Image 1 (cartoon, rainbow, N blue to C red):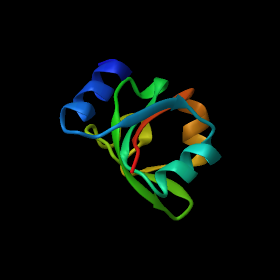
Image 2 (image 1 turned 90 degrees about the vertical axis):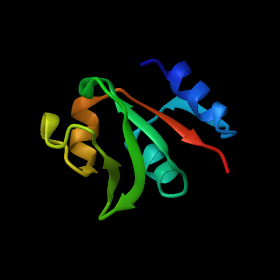
Image 3 (image 1 turned 180 degrees about the vertical axis):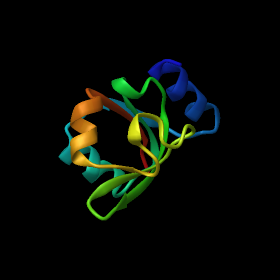
Length: 91
């Protein structure tokens, strides 16, 4: 699935989304205030953004445990699986 496909899916429900490639710090800041999807290239799929917790990005991984990721994406895994794009909902 492409980033444009996700953006169009959100738009279908009246949600305006932004897409970009972010460092862990930038992504953590965005995820602390917004929802959307996150796609580390090394994961080969999008995960829903739930928020942040314990210094990590809290995700909903449709393949729990794949590449060692269950519910949390920490700084190390973010770097190892990146580059990483976020498609997040503007409020």
